[in-house]
Image 1 (cartoon, helix red, strand yellow):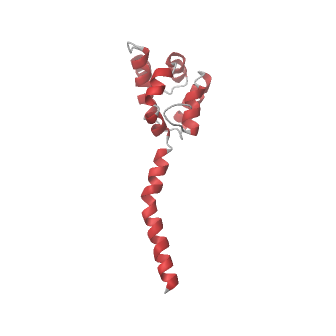
Image 2 (cartoon, rainbow, N blue to C red):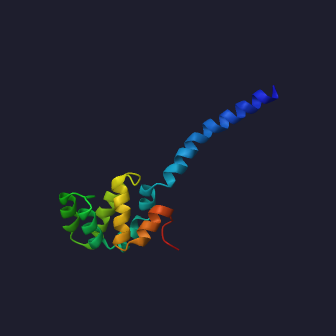
Image 3 (cartoon, rainbow, N blue to C red):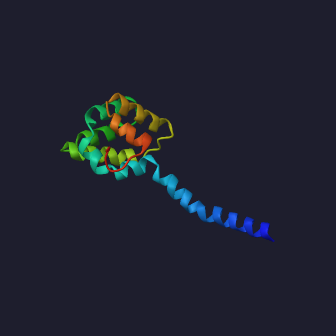
Length: 123
């Protein structure tokens, strides 16, 4: 009887832990990291070289490049770029190319945030 109740408790714990596990996995996604660091990134990303590299590597279309470059201020350009970055999958080829472009563009602090996670700033 004792072993049956232990199995029941273990099963209940595993079942109730599934939503928690899914939530914890979500917390460590690139999209989430971009979201919680949104304001910092909008103010600090140097997007001109990055947009050129993304276009050269076929990560963004010519239409997307034009949209990004036609933003009236750097703040809005960064805002649009980060919005685009939140929508891609970093585990596939395009995402890996984006990470390489970030490295080449000298945006290592953005790369570090995406790979290691982070809070609202780099402190």
